[in-house]
Amino acid sequence: MKSWVPQLLAFAFVAFSTPTASAGKATVHGDLLASSKDWPSLQFQFKLKRNSMKIHGESEFDVFANPVVSSDGVDVRYDGFAEFTEDSTFHKYTLVDGVAYYSSGSEADQTDQTPSSTVQCLEAGSLPPLNDIVSALNDATVASNVSTPDGVIKCSPGNLFKISFGGGTYALCASGSSGANIYGSDLDVAIKYLNRSVEISAPKMDADAKSECEIVVNGGYLIPHNSPENDGMVEFQSCAGGIPMTNFGSNYRNQFYVTHLNHADTTFYNGDALFKVYKKPVKWFECVL
Image (tube, rainbow, N blue to C red; front, side, top):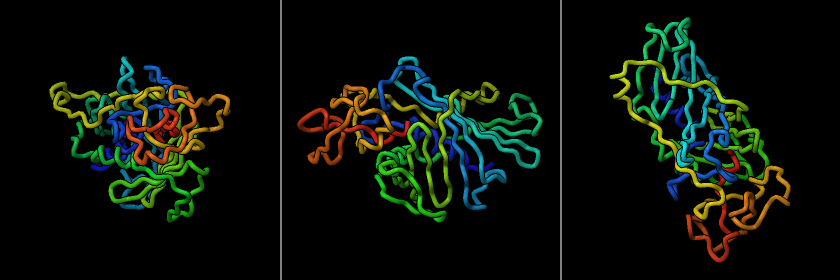
């Protein structure tokens, strides 16, 4: 079993269900209703660029994820899974209710529900430090251009960001309703929004063994767009996404609004927007959602 496979799962899901570094809470662009329909199901298309990184012999694979919003609308997390087949043996990595599972068996038993398949929980130590990923996302900087070994990344002005994590630097290109793309020297990830959810469930295992499983990923706390706690920063054109200007107001309580540049605010933490409320910015990754 590739011990770092769950890291890719966590890297993918945390980008969409992570709390912010400054407020310890997450944000959503637009008014949030306490329903999973407000969060898209996702497909992550991974492309690994080094042979040593192949997972069960595969350099390209998909990860699917469904949003799960709590009934009170306070927390959100993503369940997800990735499947591989190698030498007539299937391998499946699943993340459900914050618990990560690894299951394997013969290719004929791909339901993970048969006695012939083996299931085990993955420990928190097998995942990367999620707080570091959170910090990386919140420390993202707007980039005018980024080059990789594959060439210069093409991305609309204002939609290209640079993030650093685990000793590597990645570029993120937000594409509005189409999704987003992450580029790096070792891997690329295409993120697509799905029109419908996918079926994801935890594999069956002994109740006593399951009770020992660790929760390795927690959901983030949600702040609606019109909350006075909404904080962050972004260029307006990054979020406009073709929405008519007549839909935008000048106050953070509006569904959409244009922030005004506030030179007195250099960090834009919660509550320190000076002078007027329309100088309160919005989180850059709201544009991705």
